[in-house]
Amino acid sequence: KMPITLSICKDTYKDKEGSLLALKKWEQIEVKTYSELANYMKLYPYSMVKYGDKLNRKGSQRHNNNIAKFQNVLIYDIDNDPEQAKLSLKEAEALLKKHDISAMIIPSKSHQIEKFTRSGKSKGVQDRYRIVIPINRSLKSNDIEVYKEFQKLASKALKIDKNIDLGISQNPSTFYYPSPKTAQPIIIKSKNLMKIDKLEAKAIQNIEAEKALLGSLMLNKDAIVKVADFLG
Image 1 (cartoon, rainbow, N blue to C red):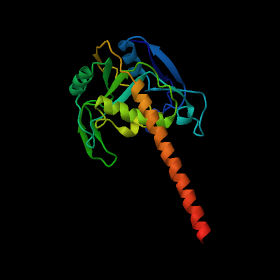
Image 2: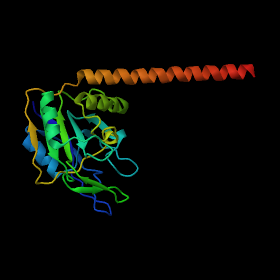
Image 3: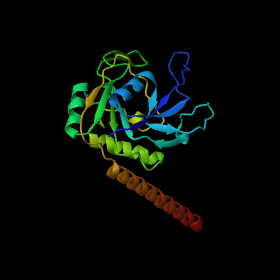
Image 4: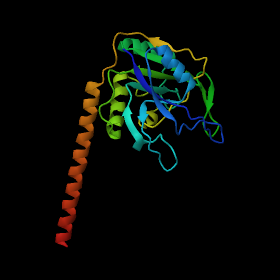
């Protein structure tokens, strides 16, 4: 079922607060075991996207206009924040086993640590982790809107759409911070990879329908304007 391709960042530049920015030095890796995958996820910032070499005005390689391809893996961030439906680590494990797909869960750096909002309000001590799901192939489309629609459909199919931060999953150039070196991954064993063929086809169909509807509305708007001009 391996190999899995993933992008990692070896840029060590940090901002004034000491946070990694992961702007440059992105490279694609290929792993053959979950153990190898977990080790990379503990060492480097990582992404589901393979980036090209084009830098934006801020000097960043990591932006939506520089996406070369989407990798053959899905990653979902579960923080169990107050605005999200709760999904404990054990519940996530049980859910993935029920789906009967190969997957890995790895705790994130804020797992079982109290987090706070910018205003200082506590978000509590929660299970916080990543769900990593190898898929049967990479997305064929590099269209950002198709990717966003695909992510909506995939999270619903997995029954985690109420648990994830949809804003993160809707931004393909998002990166994930490394997990602690002490993080213990949970492997969900299955002979089956998640199949995305129907989901991607549906995503493309939905986006094409939206574009057709928008085009029709624009034509109708132009027609109304012309009639209004003619009348007066």
